[in-house]
Amino acid sequence: MARVAVFGMGYVGCVTAGCLARDGHEVIGVDINADKVAMLQAGRAPVAEPGLDALLQQGVARGALRATGDLAAAVASTDMALVSVGTPSAADGSVDSRAVEGVVRQIGECLRTRQQKYVVVIRSTLLPGVLEEQLAPLLNDACGGGLGVRVHLCNNPEFLRETTAIRDYDHAPFVLIGCSEAHVAERVNELYQQVQAETIITDTRTAALVKYACNAFHALKVAFANEIGTLARSFGADGRRVMHIVCKDKQLNISPAYLRPGFAFGGSCLPKDVRALTRAAQQRAIATDVLSAILPSNEAHLKRAIALIQAGGVRRVGLVGLSFKADTDDLRESPLVHLAETLLGRGYPLKIYDPGVRLVNLVGRNLHFVDQHLPHLSALLVNDPRELYHFAELLVLGNDVADQLNWREAYAGPVIDVRCDLVVAPPQRSDSL
Image (cartoon, rainbow, N blue to C red; front, top):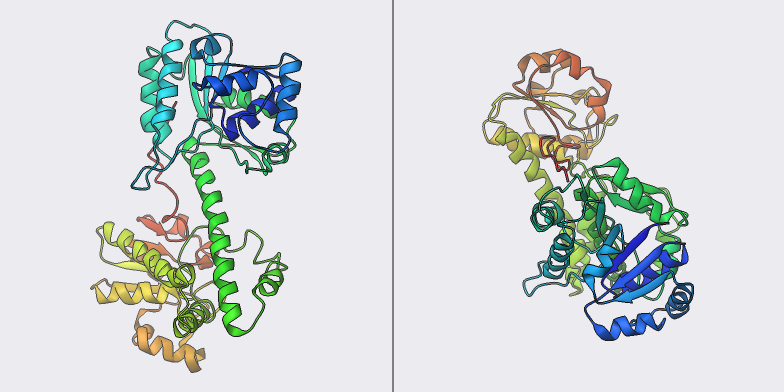
């Protein structure tokens, strides 16, 4: 059993407090609003949520749940704080974290003379970096030092939806804990022993962004479905039926496929069909902001790769892979062709290795695309990767052809892997809390 103070008795805080009390923990709900405190003490929810009144009544009746406006008393009576106060949008769209900062500061001040270990867990939704760069120094100063020794800070994003929050708590997709200390993460995880879900322990920055990525993805799905539905109506089709069938594909559409961050997409189908849809929408005077942003976003990602190569400060580039994916010679709209074309246009000496690409085998639109963008491809291709290693001052890994080579042993120079280096943080940064 854990002794927990939950700060902020809104939707997230109330549901969290009620569920923790139900699951055998000793819980104190903390809020500055006296009316909320009085309602909780009486076993009534200050927010409308199905099943929450009954849950709180049971917790109060068993003595597992109580409420207070006395923050210091709550901290003194517990070993862990879950901060669930709101993080609304500021006028410019940024996150207003002042309420979280205020609570964290007050908790820290209450811990100044405490010798027993205390864990502060951020449930509030905050961007990566806020915990590490704002809350951690604030808490350390407020508690008089000792962060990471007697006082610990981590995050535990929630994935609750209004009207289904209790069910979402009990049937979570996962329990996500951002923490650099295994023993602290385990203490937090003990809160959720009754929850039948996988526990994922990661760093605090990743945990924070997962919450935003989930919500952004949900919003994106709604907007995408509405745009397809609007187009369907203009074509005389049933948008609901279209998306119903789309969702039946669990291999590609409703699956992890195409959801691994890496390099830009290409090939003969995706760019062409996105272009066709957006053009059809324009002709029908239909705004499709999501669909219309796809190709510009893809182009922007390609430009990031070019900028990363230029930042290396070298000239001779060896490119591994040219087709839009390994084991094909289809170069149509391959982002690697566009990358190579741009580097050549900016004066970079370039050699390319892709065993699947043979000029004698290129025909039709495939050959026409190459003639347009890389008319001197024959002078750029090498047949042996060792030629590439000998030539290159920088090796660029473009597609999974790289996985078929022993470049790690054969090449000693700098390497950029556009499949991951655009989306993975450099290893030098470390947050220790």
